[in-house]
Image 1 (cartoon, protein in one colour):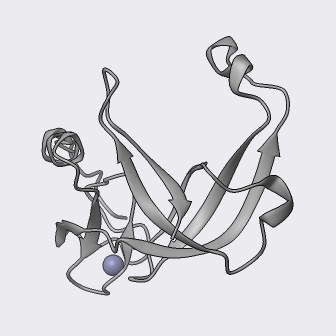
Image 2 (cartoon, rainbow, N blue to C red):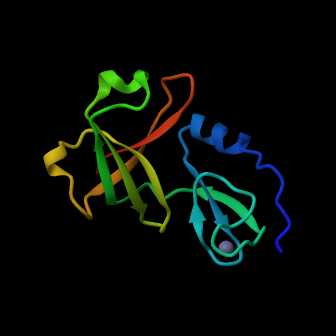
Length: 129
Ligand SMILES: [Zn+2]
């Protein structure tokens, strides 16, 4: 049995994002990269976990167009796209896809990581490369 890992200190992640850098967790044992930060690798359970800047771009792997927002705060933005993007370093992560017409969405579409620091909390999203 694998003992539970302690809480993750995500302060470095949020601080870097506020400065315009998206960090991903990197496993020192198997090389897997992921988000959100976890103390234990979700692939091999190693606790040899570090952080590294994410690749700046990748390809659209899957997506959905949201027509009915689950939270009223997003209702005025519908329809909008949430995509699963595979970055060039192998990290797969979800985020909004902005600036791409819904009819132009396709597997393998090149997208780049963008970071919005204008609000209270910085957010990453994907835009056309
Ligand atoms: Zn691992």
